[in-house]
Image (tube, rainbow, N blue to C red; front, side, top):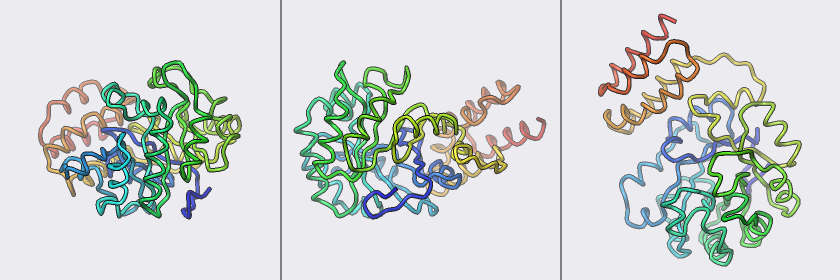
Length: 310
């Protein structure tokens, strides 16, 4: 599959997830077979005001050969300026978030709220397309407020100049519950000529093959199944390469330490480590202890002792 002039090898993508897809985690996903991994969503308005926290989200890893950033906002001119900004120059593809279900985002008329305003969504996409020669992609859901307008929305995205679209097969109201609507994704695929990426409920090779078969989509995007488990891409590809969980965690930590201060890394890694340890036997005490630690060496020592004594 090609997005613009960018060719994918495995047609596997790590979804953007706020507070999750830091550059170290993205690096792990790519090393395990993801063609690319999308940044946490970045506010176009925050870019305009040169927010340091926003700049921190734009750090990339050396092995990210295809760099993809996701931006969000509801003002076409500000979105277009963000696309053309020097801060986004390192990125190869720019994705526009029109699917985030978070109440704060929707209340501001951003994310999935834009599915209710096709004219505004069109203006955002078309102005972003005009602002760059890079591929612009759009991620959205199957509908909002009881209205399934994914096919209409997909056609609008194509007409506005989007190079590819990602459809999360849930409504805004579902958030991340219920089953992914593969039938709607199939209908979207049949309605447009640009590549369609399916997102939702892809957790292993079986669900990957089912999604491809039932939707005829061009690629898949994996989200929550990767939490603490970035090697899920190896499993989807049916590659039985041995992975070492402790080494993954240490790589994640040390990569973050190359950019962020220790206290940030300690706090940020707590949730990741809980995900990494999920399913491990007798790990409750270790989880509780790690959540109290403030020094990264202490965290690593606890983990090393845990895995040594398994």
